[in-house]
Length: 133
Image 1 (cartoon, rainbow, N blue to C red):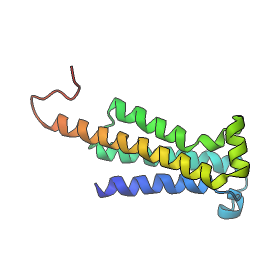
Image 2 (tube, helix red, strand yellow):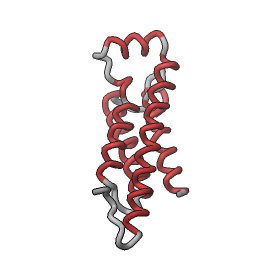
Image 3 (cartoon, rainbow, N blue to C red):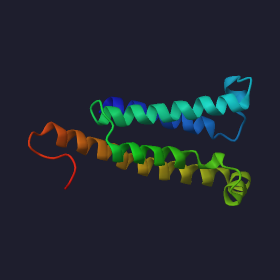
Image 4 (cartoon, rainbow, N blue to C red):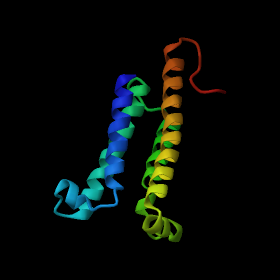
């Protein structure tokens, strides 16, 4: 379970660095902002997937994978400036937006990890179906 926590922490650390109010160029010395955004998003998604796979003992259950993708999209919501509400909150209330988005993402991700754990425990018990009929 310790590796699940480690991968989860790494995923959200990358997500928070990506959402900082300062430019990623200033923090990491990236030559291109778009490249840095892509790298941080891929890193976030990879660590979320690793955490769910670790919780599922080597496999990702379909529902756990779906919830992980939802958690990733929610964590990345502030990168959709075409939404008027997101643009307003990002400009005027960045901390409120960031805390709300990441808290919602963590809640969804908790259910993904919980589902992966339940699926792996059900698969370990012989004679018990992993999916309800």
